Length: 269
Image (cartoon, rainbow, N blue to C red; front, side):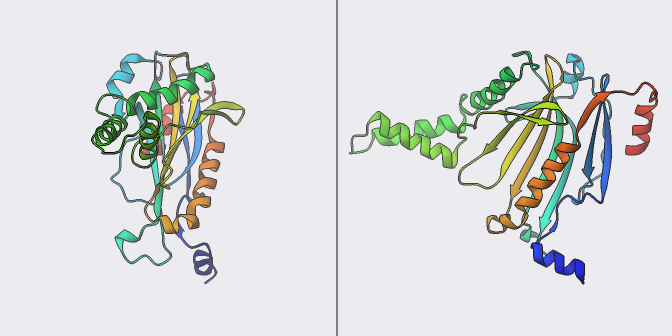
């Protein structure tokens, strides 16, 4: 009865449950990456999780990389947590979902260890993609210019550009806020966020330099299915995101743990 009352008081069920948590250990060349991730509450087919990531190897990266929009990366692992109403009758009644994905990225365009370069690089990659040939932003710009050129009213360049800017904010891919420095466990990360002004769904990215050409990226996707219910679970999702980030540690592999990969294979098997 107490648990049921608690569920109705907070207005949702689901989300990350840190009482049902796995301590992940991943080998990044000579480093050990550890973090605590609650188990997913979304049914999914079992999948094999790699536990060793030679992030400096160009051959390894080319063999395993994936592409999604402007993101090119090697996938490490993903966890998903649904947020649901206390009484869930219909499949369409989900409030939303929080996802956490870890991945490795490589680039030869900058020195990743220079966080000022990394901050500019992350924003530039987004801009270059969404203002590239046949992109949504370019299509919006061309459509508005053509429409205004056919109008019986004379529009100034400033008025046209203002309309383009407002339309991109609502229907395209508006400029990102500047990336910024954040610290977790005395390690410098770079944070940036993708979000539209008229949409509660957003993506938060945390990037940790690993070498001059590689970095770890942690993406949190806050998918909002029912905007009128987002307030009920948004604070829980943000607190869970913060707790996961605070659990991430990168350290030297202990010399006495030569069987680390074997231990991890047994753990994830």
